[in-house]
Image 1 (tube, rainbow, N blue to C red):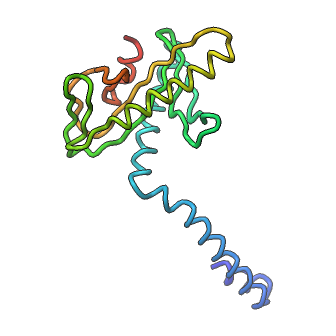
Image 2 (cartoon, rainbow, N blue to C red; image 1 turned 45 degrees about the vertical axis):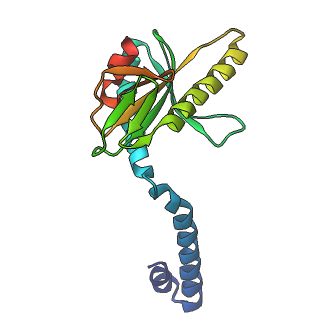
Image 3 (tube, one colour; image 1 turned 90 degrees about the vertical axis):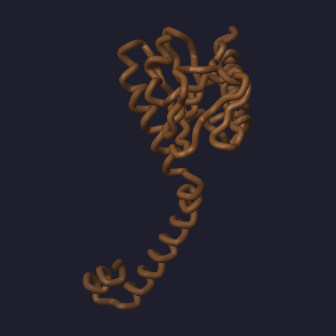
Length: 181
């Protein structure tokens, strides 16, 4: 398309072919960089974050302030939603899980999605909250506890809010209720 437009405008096929090749190279590079994002459910992850962000926007009237996609220094990781409000400070991860698989907990210490343990996911949420707490505490000069939370979209969560391995786990649609408790 680029070559055809340039050929029609400038009536020079050499420039048209050169620009068409450059456009093809740029498109290939762009697609190769974003291809990994569409593997392993990245689109679902973005959709979950968008749904949580929409609920947090409505919470502003109740005094909640949100910082989205906060990078963690010296790490490639980000905190999906850092929320500061009347009930405390929260590091909330938004997750879109397979709705066909059941969520269950064992002894209040283990979280499973179908047959797979989500221990790693819970440990990561605790780590992110600890990083946020450390940064905020250093900046403000006093201890700022940050509560880790996991907002789950997709499967039916059989509880309102439960705490597993020090992480509050709840269905994403109950975010407002969770923050106000």
